[in-house]
Amino acid sequence: MGLLDLCEEFFGERDLYKLLDLEKNALPRDIKKAYYKMSLQVHPDRVEDDEKSAATEKFKVLSKAYQVLSDKEKRGLYDEQGVIVDEEDEGKLSSW
Image 1 (cartoon, rainbow, N blue to C red):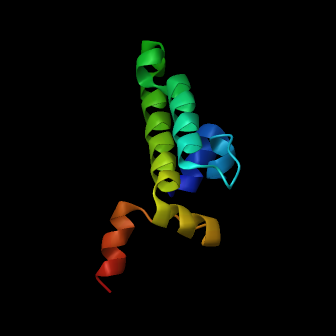
Image 2 (cartoon, rainbow, N blue to C red):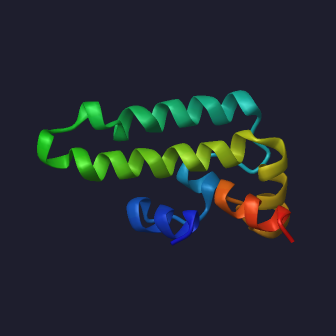
């Protein structure tokens, strides 16, 4: 399952910008601020024990979304083509 599928599953949103309540032209500081704000809402340490496992998965998905938007190359690829290159995928692509 890809990152966009996980975003939809956990947050009901496939668009990384909408997930973080950002505009496409958001500055890096805005992305960081939005990520921080959202991470406080889903952080596993801020939920009841019975919700920790779901919160952990949500937090991981949110962190990956932030990694895409905070990396200039990954963000450019996402903006242009809607593609997210995962670390595991990068190894496969470079071994062609």
